[in-house]
Image (cartoon, one colour):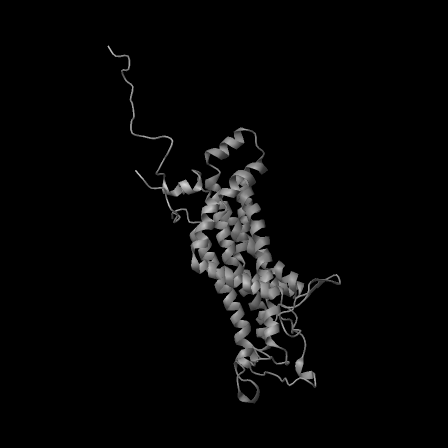
Length: 346
């Protein structure tokens, strides 16, 4: 009678070399038999998205042009000496007797974007104006995303009456139209860089709070969260080390799309004359100073360049940011599988 009764023997299977794995793991011999993390896979997929990468190049180019447009001095120390813009954006050129420049001169080789109503070089003003318009978008989104993440994470993790109280306050904030609330804040604080940052940050964090709350409500029920709690990990560690990193994807997508929205909002306030001081090189304020040209300019002609170039800068940046946001959304979509070479065989 055999003593091997009930035993199963498997043959023809080499455990030292696995030639096929689940595609979602992105495993292959080229990776050294290691799986690829979700964020690394998302970055790889984002780089393969040509439209998104075009947006990155456009935003990077516009940001670099804004930074190096004119020298930057902080506390009397020049930290950036390069000047791409040929003229000071506040310099009224036609006051110089040696300069053959007038008001609303059309684009020429010396002035590629022409001049504005005060005889200032539009090319220089558009480049320098990007510093305020672009930086406000990134600063506001950085502040609102961080505040919304912390707020929503605390509400979702503790739940109960804490969640009810915190989210009812969010509902109250959302009840106010964001742009109207920004108008009220700017009217109270006055125009300027930081008042505009505050004006768009106060209503802007609520959307992030709701997004992260919804994600964490599902993530916090996973086994690894329960295991961390059972091992005695502090709530702060559980929230920001174990839960938040696995709920960040929708927030990142929203942040990438919101930068362009903030830039449009700042330009809208500037066009209404509630942003920066008149004459400030900022895209929306520049449109406000030249909006009379939309009807009729000097001598019955319309100097289209006075509005087309500042407006075109806003359009180009916002379009590029939307392309990046769509690319980030596609890259972080868990339902799609990255196009990477898989180990074949069999």
